Amino acid sequence: MVGMLKLETLHDGGLAHDFSLVCRRRMTGLARGTTVAALAAGRAYSPLVRSGIVRGDLRRSFGTATGAARGVPLDIRLRITSANSGRPLPDYAVYLWQGDRDGNYSLYDGGLEQENYLRGVQTADTAGWVRFTSVFPGAREGRWPHLHIEVYPSLACRDLLHSGQIALPGDACEKVYATDGYSAELDPTAMSLPLEMACVTGDVRRGMVATRTLSV
Image (cartoon, rainbow, N blue to C red):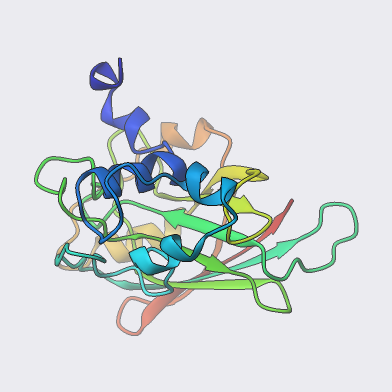
């Protein structure tokens, strides 16, 4: 039963699970039973766009939710390329979601069930780049600081091609976690998990930049 699943499992669910939950909680003007699968089957992804989840700035909730995530700015730049040819894959869609500076997830953690910030969908440009504006996530107990991603061949968001987590380097995390508003501590044992690592540059005052190429 879904009600018996731990939050760690629920917030790892991906776009199909998250978007259905957004609709069930009436956070958008879409019908309560709307699902990503139903939109894709009808070749009508405009409701996905109308919902507000297709956006580059993830810091505020969309639809009827009004909350905002605070923290050190994080500019996320992902390049989507072909695993066979290495060429960029324009128009491929990426769903990205993450925890806030406390390591908590909108939609799932206590007090955040009616918020949906720090999650969104973008499509790659002609060079394969996807860009999101976010905040640097805190560390969740037992988990290394990371971003969740799913890659689809189009904005219809069917035929999932890649699902994974992008880890953030320890040195960048330590700099951010020393600033006001963060209280996270890194768990070295969590790095035993198979995570892709982002390259992170910048500083805590002007913001950090995370870059990663994803071959699918």
